[in-house]
Every structure is written in structure tokens, then in C-alpha cells.
Length: 127
Ligand SMILES: NC(=O)c1ccc[n+]([C@@H]2O[C@H](COP(=O)([O-])OP(=O)(O)OC[C@H]3O[C@@H](n4cnc5c(N)ncnc54)[C@H](O)[C@@H]3O)[C@@H](O)[C@H]2O)c1
Image 1 (cartoon, rainbow, N blue to C red):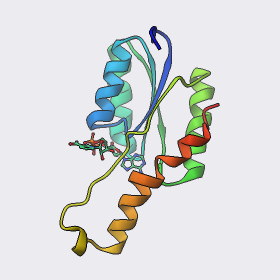
Image 2 (image 1 turned 90 degrees about the vertical axis):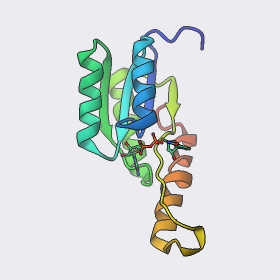
Image 3 (image 1 turned 45 degrees about the horizontal axis):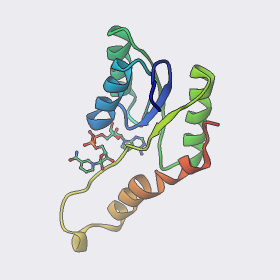
Image 4 (image 1 turned 135 degrees about the vertical axis):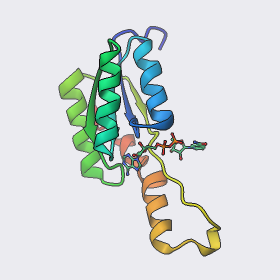
């Protein structure tokens, strides 16, 4: 995609870190940005920051471990911006410590977010 002006990006985990960095960079390049995150407060701050700077951003609460939540976020994005041109499966988590001593709930959390959380987007929920 050579000309991103007016195109739409959806970024999971866009409320902080690298996701927020991408949202800022995409917006600065003229893209509309949908920020999806499980944390609503920082998500709303990120949306406000981009809009205050003259961008066109919106937010949608999404839990990437839940297929239904991802589907709803995709629908919300197309309702808001019409189409999605770029999807960034950025949401991710890390748990400290050694693999062999990590608890099963933490293994499940990490794989649910970092592995299974990426797969629903292959179904192209945004159309
Ligand atoms: N920072 C690094 O050095 C580094 C290195 C390698 C890979 N990564 C990966 O890059 C990505 C971004 O890393 P970061 O450092 O910016 O992380 P970060 O913690 O700053 O941001 C991650 C965002 O994802 C959101 N999130 C967490 N669980 C979620 C869920 N279930 N549904 C929706 N959103 C959820 C968080 O609320 C947060 O806003 C992650 O996938 C991470 O694993 C980061």
C-alpha cells in the first residue's frame, strides 16, 4: 500500500507500548485508527491524544482471547470507518520467571493472548 492517506488501521493492544506507537505513527501518516484494547481507561486516553492532535481515532474494548469480542470489534470498526485496510495483531503479554516453574493458569493466559488471540483475525471479521 503506497498511499495510506485516509486508510483505516485496527490495532489490538493499541492503548500502550508499541501498539500506541503504531497508532501515533499511522495517524501522523494520515490514517484513521481504531484502537482495540482490553484496558478501557488507557485506550480512551490514547484515542483522545490522537484526536486532540488532529487525527481521526476511535476505540473499542476488545479481549483478543474471546472470538465473539474480536468479531464485535471488527463490526464496530467497519461501522465507524467503513473498511479496514491494516490489522495489527499487536496485543500480547509476558509472564516472568522460568518456563518449568510457571503456573498452568499463566501458561493458559499467555497462550490464550499471544497465540490464540492472533488467530481469530484470520477469519477477516472486518470484511
Ligand atoms: N516490548 C518488547 O520488548 C517486546 C518484545 C517482543 C515482543 N513484544 C510483543 O509486542 C507486543 C506489544 O508489546 P508492548 O511491549 O508494547 O506491550 P504493552 O504491555 O505495552 O502493550 C500491550 C497491550 O495489549 C493489551 N492487552 C493485553 N491483553 C489483551 C487482551 N486479551 N485483549 C486485548 N488487549 C490486550 C494491554 O492492555 C496493552 O495495552 C506484544 O505482543 C508483545 O508480546 C514486545
